[in-house]
Amino acid sequence: MRSAFLYSPHGIAASAGEGIDVIHVSCLPYLCGEPLPEKAARPYRLLLSFPFISKGRAYRLFCERFREFADRFDGFTLQNIGDYGMLSDLLSGSGLSRDRFFVAGDVSLNITNAETALFWQNKLDSAAILPELQPEEQAALAGRFPKGLIPEIIASSKTIVMRSEHCYAARESGFGCGRCGKTGLSGGSLFDIGGREFPIITNPLDCNSLLLTPVESSDLLSEAGDIGLSKDRVIARVR
Image (cartoon, rainbow, N blue to C red; front, side, top):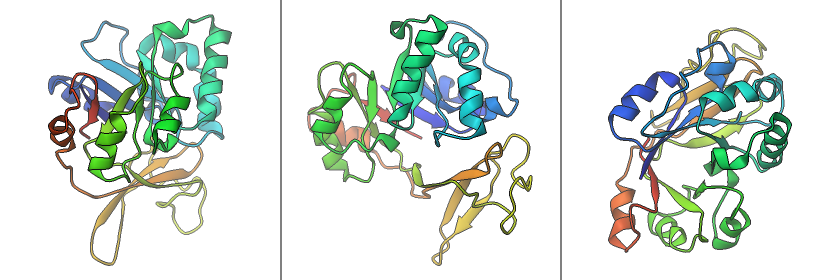
């Protein structure tokens, strides 16, 4: 299986056309006014990610609109350990069964060993392995995942370098400066001394942001297959 994590919903159609099996999409564009996807049967799972910081206006709006989101998405992607308890409360309060949804854990859950993966057994359907591990370490850990929990290996290195409650794109120390636009996601980039470009993902609702790594993709899925991990029980995130 292959997955993609999108910060804009405009990439959903292209990902679906490429045969992606699981599409994680950020909730921020929808909270900022982007129209929700149509409610329909899909050949892929479309998962809505919780906000990357579990507080603030974005988190409150996410919880307030949860029932609406639950009607349009096939599941949810957790960003923090507290999101699991919140999801359970939201499902209970909405009268919805957990069995209706595919629930994934993102790299921010810091799964680095079999014990951490075991903690999430019977809670999540899939969990991403921390991409800071070497490819061979990720593949080996995927082979030790408990029954019922699908390992997600980050075949693409376009992941998060840093989360901040401040905005890397803000003008000076401004709050609500509007630089990232009404729907965010256009925070520009930072450059290191070597000229590498680090894209910025912005949240205009709370003026916080993410810094993404500029590292190019590697063919980690084939490495996982080479050591005997069946590709039908491993999710490889390709972007």
